[in-house]
Length: 137
Image 1 (cartoon, helix red, strand yellow):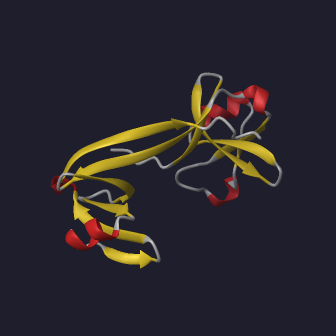
Image 2 (cartoon, rainbow, N blue to C red):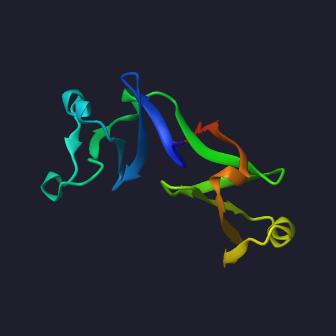
């Protein structure tokens, strides 16, 4: 299962993360083949794992922009998945106080509750994709 909670776009048919950085837009990839598409490796001297590649783009160079979030059904309720451990756990989150107390989530911020659960206790994992129409405004 790959956990994705970020903003994405298509660049030359390839899905990439996108963000505003210092007044411009950058797309990010983790595939070395991106170098052939004009990407630059981020801090190659540090031998990052995974390797990170980025490219400055204009709004005209990319497709629609959308937010992707990974969710799960746990004990009959929907939660976002924030993290996944390679072995057998995921970190679930929500901000519904009544539900969080009922399911013994821990408060980590004023309106944020989280709980680490075993993957086997999660019934369904899926992504939600929402178009962001005003990203470049």
